[in-house]
Image 1 (tube, one colour):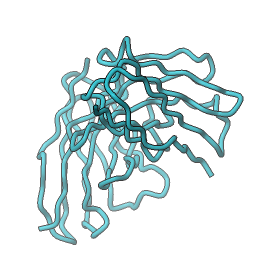
Image 2 (cartoon, chains in turn green, brown; image 1 turned 90 degrees about the vertical axis):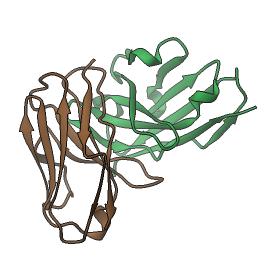
Image 3 (cartoon, chains in turn green, brown; image 1 turned 30 degrees about the horizontal axis):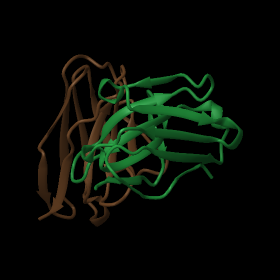
Image 4 (cartoon, rainbow over the protein chains, first blue to last red; image 1 turned 90 degrees about the horizontal axis):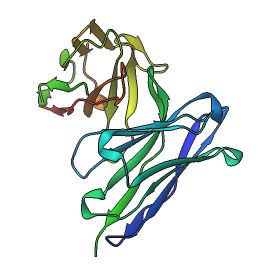
Length: 117
Length: 107
């Protein structure tokens, strides 16, 4: 069965970096895009961008340029989200989701990133 | 960017009620409108894509309609497990923006 399994919660200090992983199984990884979605505490869903799993080409939403990097390790069917120069306002749950214009049909369980001194 | 709005922002209803949630896009998005359900502490779940196509495994009491800029999600007879937050999302063009959500609560 299709699964996206994300790495565990992270507690980081301001200015540090974090890398969140999303491991796909149960399907051919390169057939579907991976999207990243942020949900701040008590807030709604915010689309951060997506990565083409065939080419590795990322597309970022405007608010997620500069400190945010999407990458792949196709040899192990993983997508990664790296955030650098962490700020308190980056505290959120980060989700990966499979899909594109027909919606995101499978999601990871979410990774809580807490930024606190 | 395409902005999405939803109404109401919250809604109280009873088991068995018929409920409709509205989503509006700031410009035409054809039929590229998806609906998600999210329960506390869980990932969103895709309910409907392309305005009206039910995702596999989703009960038939959920339905979607609309086109252009105005869309609706209808739950024909609320069940206890339907109390959650619902989000619309446009996938017509990136960024694939979400609506602010509608929290459906038990009356």
